[in-house]
Length: 116
Image (cartoon, rainbow, N blue to C red; front, side):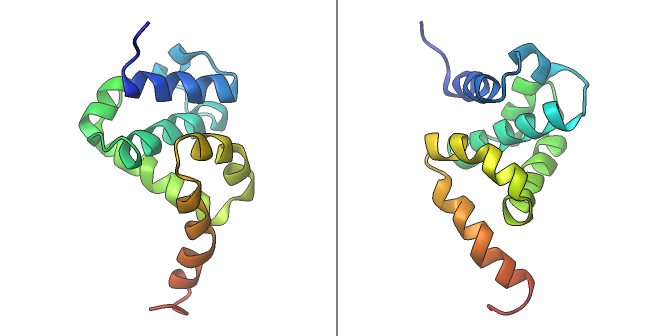
């Protein structure tokens, strides 16, 4: 059975985090739901090149919420070891692991003005 690339990301992330896909559409904002939802936003944007509006439609969210979610994933990849280790399987699956490592090392240095 065919799944659109966005649906596949949603299904893969939900399976990885042991969450039912319908929970991604809920209003719940606990870490257990919000972090995987934001990871879906990040993968759909960075790997699939899908607009924030389309991602928002998939997840019943506004496009500005999607932009915020993507930014939060980028920050967590830099500073949150728990998030990075939990998300690493999905990042590897979608070929984004190298980006995670660059956030981990290079972006922190940029933030400290050590690297121009």
